[in-house]
Amino acid sequence: MFNKKYYYLFKIQYLGYRFHGWQKQPNVKTVQLMIERTLKFILEEQKFRILAAGRTDAKVSANEGAFELFLNDAPINDFDAFLTLFNHNLPQDIRALSMREVDDKFNIIQSSKTKEYLYLFTEGQKNHPFCAAMVTTILDPLDIELMKQGAALFQGKHNFKSYCYKPSDKGIFMREIDSCELVENTIFTANFFPEKSYILRVKGKGFGRNQIRLMMGALINLGRGDVSLDFIKESLLPENNRVIEYIAPASGLILNKVEFEE
Image 1 (cartoon, one colour):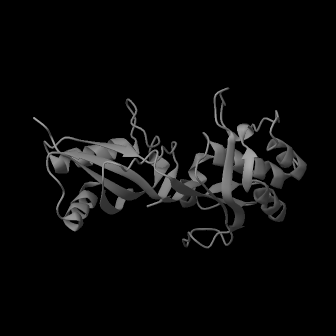
Image 2 (spheres, rainbow, N blue to C red; image 1 turned 30 degrees about the vertical axis):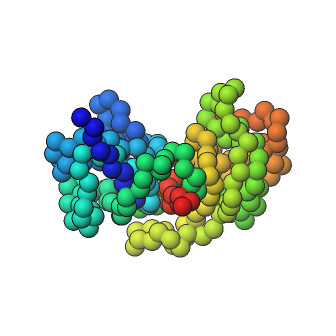
Image 3 (cartoon, one colour; image 1 turned 90 degrees about the vertical axis):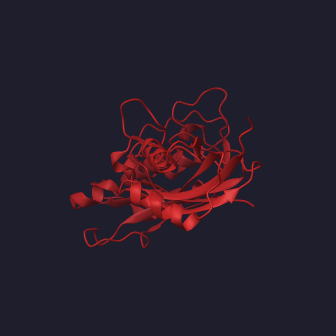
């Protein structure tokens, strides 16, 4: 018997600190696992599967991530009621923001989209322990103005092979970053945050494995005085062999927004 299928795009938020990333894995708690458990409970016997717009690593958070729900047999008629039920049963560190129906031509992986990542950090001081879930603390003093210059170098089309973890010979390393800037944090605030914190804001259509964290690692080394602006310039050249050894901690990275072209 033919089963009719229905397709829904969800936007979600989650704090990644206690999860081993998005993708379901044996014997560990992941975002995908908790979402699928919740959907299985509220959909009961109805068959479904989900697919994310991208897989975040362990401890990485999302202010606005996305996944697609593929549903068999019967549609969801009342979106508001479904979202309320979904959120009621999700764990407290995951929240569904919105949902909308899409058609079978929509492909959450291949559909053109832009992602914006933020990396939140402080420098030169020990922070309140509550910051650990979303703010990376660099105890060394950093030259923030020099790091701002370094961040601007990543903008545009470059060879990002040095900024891909364990790159293969078949990888796609020529990528374009729409915008990259380091600014003072005015987005996320709390009374236990230090007086000043900073954000690396990066926007583009696609990123390699650990690319943002390796970019941030290079900027931290720049701010410490371990490398120069010329090092970063050379690391982006077509035939460079530079190796970026320092990967910035995962807990400071936030998937801030995923935008799909209609």
